[in-house]
Length: 228
Ligand code: SF4
Ligand code: FES
Image (cartoon, rainbow, N blue to C red; front, side):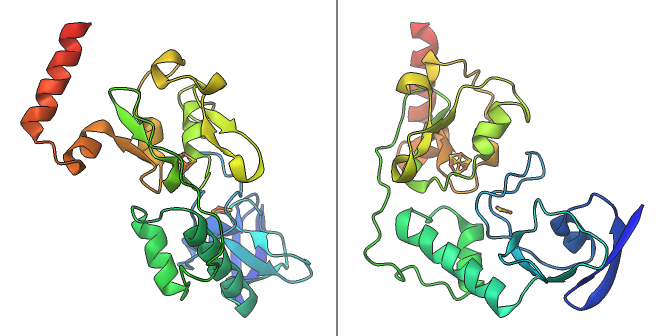
């Protein structure tokens, strides 16, 4: 079945059960996303994709809301732009976005100021370097949940990581805060691949950035193999 509705004043037809984000992309309408990833189940956590739907009191996340007949959707209304800008400013005030180029581009496009909330408390946990494959720097984590999802039902079925803590203290963690080798992690690297902010980084890249040469890194790796 097909639904027909209005997106930014233009009549659009699409298959039933498609999200507003999917339909926008099919029609060349740009809606920004952060937590959404084609390979993971959309959970509408970041809210950067919000759009205005006539008759709805609050803005709706386009990555999960399905199109319905006669809906009137605005993807770039003043309210939408303001909401996206504020979300970006809140992120920039509490976490390190230095390795999130796509979000930096959004900040520029939406005129978001990184100093809008100067009194905001920043998340600055220590870097976790506890396994041979990747390091975890949760000062760069925006809790998009992609890594947890690919580690669970969306791909690997390993369940090594999940949300940990509450409120401001929430972060991605392991059961009982175990090191990665003590969990069910199989070092598949899929979490690193879907992380949008550099919070999860290949160990080799981390060591190169620390100033180690490729040769020094390969000696480290050889030493690790010998110890086994
Ligand atoms: S570590 Fe990366 S992928 Fe995982 S929740 Fe944080 S930002 Fe998202
Ligand atoms: S992309 Fe839709 S809520 Fe994050």
